Image: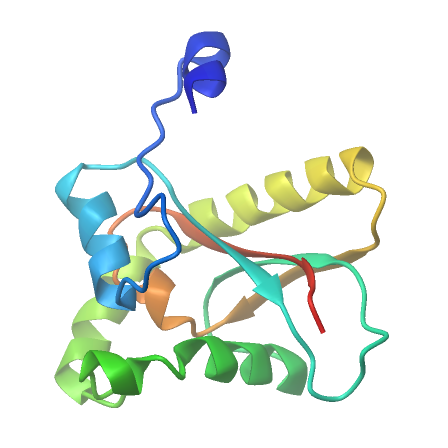
Length: 153
């Protein structure tokens, strides 16, 4: 955190620094209340289909275009039931979609930038930039991405 701030002049706001559960809504609330310029959610991927899956991928918020992207988002969004959130609230969906539309292109470009640089720097395969309906990205009122670093399965 300090190294990045000192060398790049970037201030990082962590949603947590311990292994504790923080609701998906609370994560983006922290970014919104601090007027963050970007929201990055970092995860480790998993696959129920194969333990041989490898690589990293970067997502931005949009309708999933593949069955696999939809499955990853469903897995990540499963914690909503613990947060007491109903993911099919139509009015909320419309308001969030309006807010996110303004940041869609920036989020896509940011995801491409991260994926391209990681591909050059990391010794693992790139699974590309994808889009899916991650709830954690929906609450961010700024460009936002979700990085699946590697597979733990």
